[in-house]
Amino acid sequence: MKYINVADLHIHTTASDGAYGVEEVTRMASQAGLEIISITDHDSVSALDARDKITSVELVSGVELSAELGAREVHILGYYINPDDEKLRVTLEGLQKMRRARLHAILEKLSEMKIDIDPQEVLDIAAGASVGRLHVAELLIDKGHVNTLYEAFRNFLGPEGKAFVPKTRFSVYEAIELLHSAGGAAVLAHPGYVFAPVEVRGFAREGLDGIEAYYPRHSPGDTAQALSLAEELDMVATGGSDFHGRRSTEVPLGASRVSREHVEKLYQRSRRYAAG
Image 1 (cartoon, rainbow, N blue to C red):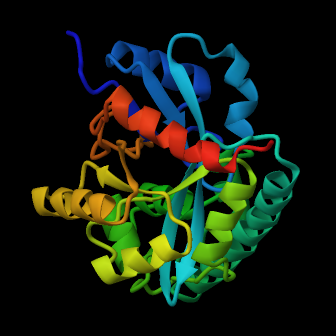
Image 2: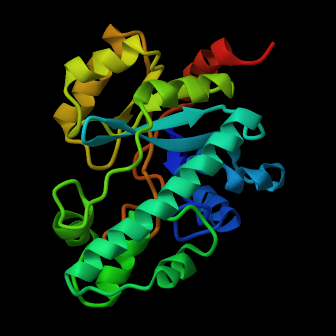
Image 3: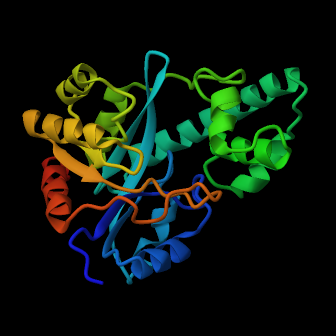
């Protein structure tokens, strides 16, 4: 089958909280009819160290940064970044330390509720990758405390959960500036059910370059609103599956796609920030 939409620009690997490594992800992407992918691991670019070995699909270098707006998390995707940028690498190392500190705080809260998870169990699941709440959620399921990832975040790990711990503050502006300094474009991830248009307009004033309009969990209305905002604010509309490959409820690779035209617009936007 020949696809018009050939790019999935939101994919995670074992370098953060995905279930598959780079080699397996690229094989699966090719089998799904994808021609272009972006690996966007959480606060990590280590998977991109193998970028020269990826030949079955075109790779857009990416990352997903977690910032804050009040008590809410804002996920900012970076595209066409230089993974070897020193400022980016140093900042990501600092964010990794924050993630580990947050992990211990979450586990302490769970322990107070008689839910005992050894930090090493989480680290073992992460296998040296960027540790996150999804790894804790996996263990909550395995130990019988919840049945689904949704329940894990609703009851314990999400903003309204009993074991929620906010991250050390990293602002949206700082995230955008970091991505620009690394030569990349900054895109707001899955905005549909999280942010109001007035907030997106605020992000645009801070330098946001794009908005993830095509996303598996967006309603038709969410997508339409994102596309309208992209046009109004002269931003690039992007899309991707947010593939992790965990649990039977996970959306498949390529569940949301965009065309080469979208990718080219994103590339041209990133050239504003390219060194030299």
